[in-house]
Amino acid sequence: MKDLLIFDMDGVLVEVTESYRATIQATVKHFTGDEPSRVEIQDWKNRGGWNDDWLLSHRMILERGGKVEYQTVVDHFQKLFLGDGTNGMILREQWVAREGLFERLKDSHDLAVFTGRLREEAYLTLNRFAPGLFGLVVGSDDVSKPKPDPEGIHKIRSIVEHRACWYVGDTIDDARSAKAAGVPFVGIAAPANPRYGELVDILRGEGAVAVLDDINTLEAVVAKGSAQ
Image (cartoon, rainbow, N blue to C red):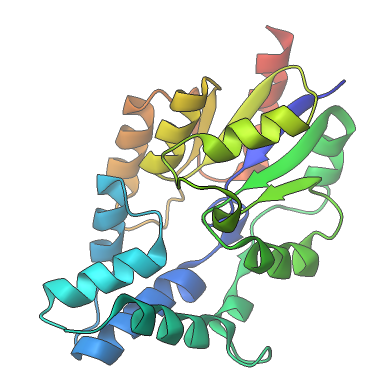
């Protein structure tokens, strides 16, 4: 039996500034004529409760005086994000892990994903960058309650036999999900984040056992935890 590492995706496994975050900006601008800054989007994320980018886009549109149905916003967002398979913003995503990281982690850990993405969208990216490395993927359409509810973490832990377990994420909702599930949380705060210092403080304040610039230094953290 191995230890279990559960990962969020956006901002953890993949850099999404030019995919999800850019799609929020473009969607809000389409319906209001006003493009939110990346700082504004991060400020919303740091408040907690805005893990769902569809809901966030709709809320930002309403706050700018736009009057549009939620489903209309979702449909436009998805059109931009997925495109026709050759031109969607999802193709702008960049894989964060350096070569060999997950192959090494897989020797001593089962690897899983709990993400706010739809499971199908998660696999589009995972199959592109890391096919076959993650044994179980739980998306937003696999749970009845989104983060910060711990349902997704509990679901993975009930399926995958394991010893120690960690959840790795980059938002306050990820940290609170881990805390509610009773598992150690490893925070990721990229130095390029427009609210880097604030995010580090938030994740530490939510009880992160470590806050890393990216997942490439994760091995030392989980090795230390496994040895305790």
